[in-house]
Length: 100
Image (tube, rainbow, N blue to C red; front, side, top):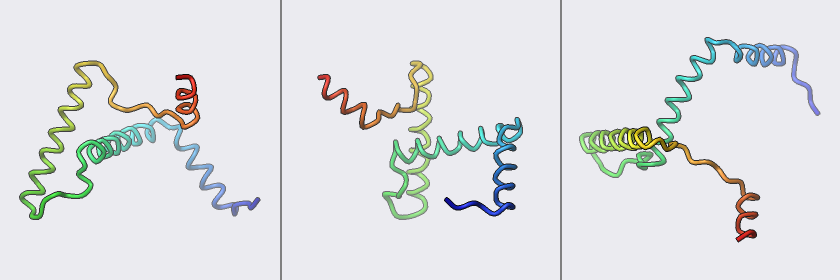
């Protein structure tokens, strides 16, 4: 086991203490929302890599992807279904297949 130098340990301790403040939580809430939206857009619509060549076509593709994400979120809100998928561990999946 290696020990961290004192200045790194104190910086880490201060950063962890700062995470309990309301100002930090507000900032992180905004960041988490933005990262969640980006993840949903890339996972749902596949805009990680553009299908077309040319700025005009790529802009149109991004506009359609943003519209699709908005429609997906509206549908989830209207029907009361959660947007995120719950993760099932491999052990749980194995248990479910053995029970069937």
